[in-house]
Structure formats: structure tokens, C-alpha cells
Image (cartoon, rainbow, N blue to C red; front, side):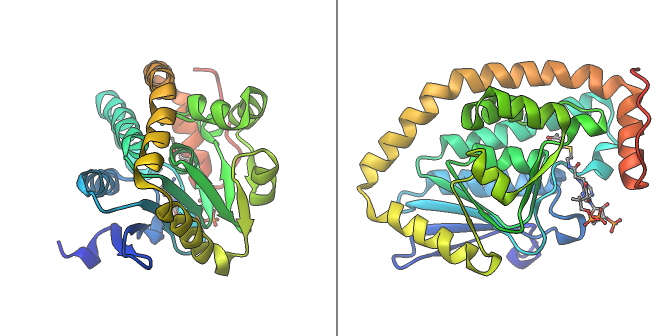
Length: 264
Ligand code: CAA
């Protein structure tokens, strides 16, 4: 497959060519993560991990969606074992973001829902377009967050806000995400990428060893908590996946109707 055909594309940018810009290209399904996209993303992150000259990474997309979560069409075709693998795979890939030696900025251009919001939470810094929409809508589908939302969101926004967002499944605007400390800045859509690059250049101009060591402290401090949370999310995924409410939730979403959950 040629580089242009890939879902996850990346290039080196910036005045010293030492910033990596990762963009997702699965616009038809609003950049929802399917298996190919997860594999390609992991491959790109592993490549970056081995590079010594990179100073910062930006993750973004174009259009109305950053990442609309896991691909629900693909998810509906999975059996229980495959579903557990999907949860575990996303967790490993997002942990890789934290384990990169350099800071990662999520430049959230549009929908960041479910796994898409969790992706942004695994990044070191989040900035957003004024058109971005955040949310952990899993419970509205019959799922519990599986890619670190229940552990990273409380660390970032506080437990009360995390419970509000995760238990209601409500979507919030970029401005509300700013008020809730989920993002550090909001910009007009046409300025988002420039602002992300500016931020990345600032980081890239700092002492590389010091930046790497500072990030390492954050990662190691919260690593155990994340791992423990991951295990608990895997346990929580099992009864959800086995329930008929999940089928109902996904069917209702795609048929644009209100789900009728039966608690089984
Ligand atoms: N998976 C697969 N396809 C998706 C998708 C998803 N998560 N989100 C959107 N799409 C598809 C739609 O099915 C539609 O495809 P078709 O044109 O083939 O019908 C296309 O993207 C455009 O979507 P809409 O027509 O729905 O666009 P909209 O502007 O009316 O609504 C939206 C946008 C609010 C994001 C809506 O699409 C939506 O709610 N999507 C689901 C988002 C979601 O719930 N994500 C969480 C998934 S669960 C998860 O991520 C758990 C985990 O961590 C493992």
C-alpha cells in the first residue's frame, strides 16, 4: 500500500523539520478506529519512538471529525474474544502515546467521541477548534469506556466532571471542554493547525533532555494507575458486550432513534 493510501499519514514539519504531524484519513466514517487504522497508528507511533531527532508530535484530522471513537459497524461484527482484543489493542496503542519520549499534542478539529476523546486524553496537551465536540457516549450505546477514559478523564478534569460526562454520555462543546480543563485552548478552525505548530515549536525549542525527563516523570507517576484502570475497563467490557442492550444501543444510533434498554 502506498503512503497516500494509508489511513494514518504522517510527515515531518516545522522550521527544523523535527515535529511530526499525524493525520487521520478515514473521513467516510468520521475517522472511527477500525482494525487497519489501529494497526497503522501503532506502526507510526513505534517508528516515532525510535527516532532521536523528533521533538514533538501533533495528532489531528481534517473536516468535521477528529476521531468518532471505535468503528461501531466493525464492532458489531465481533465475537466476545475479538471484542476483548479490540479493547486491549486500543489500550496498548494509547499507552504508546504516553510512552513516547516526546510530548504529543492533540489538535482536536471536530468530533472527539468515545475512543476519540480517549485518544485526546492520552495525549500530553489538548487544544481544540471552536467546532470540536467532546464526549464519552459509551453508556448511551450499552458500553463502558474501554480505552482509558475512566482513568485519564478524572486525572485531567477531576472525578466529578469525569463522572458527569461518562455517566450521562452527554456531548460538550469546545468552550465547555475549556471550562472543564479538558483542553488548554480553543481557536477558530482555520487557526488550529498553526496554533498547534506554534505550541510544538515552543516545546521543540526547549532543552530536549529536560522535556523528555519531565514527560517521563508524568508518565511513570500515573503508569500504575492507568494499567490498573485498563484492567478494570477490560473487566467492565465483558458484561456490556454480552448484553442485548449493546445491540440495541448501536442499532438505535444507526437508525437515529432512541434506544430502549432492558437491563439485559
Ligand atoms: N463507527 C462507525 N461509523 C461511524 C461512527 C462510528 N463510531 N461514527 C460515525 N460513523 C459513520 C456513520 O455511520 C455515517 O456513515 P454512513 O454515511 O455510511 O451512514 C458517517 O460516519 C457519517 O455519520 P453521520 O451521518 O451520523 O454524521 P452526523 O454528522 O449526523 O453525526 C456523529 C455525527 C454525532 C459523530 C454521529 O455519527 C455519532 O454519534 N457517531 C457515533 C459516535 C460514537 O458514539 N462514538 C463512540 C463509539 S464507542 C467507543 O469508541 C468505545 C471504545 O472506546 C472502544
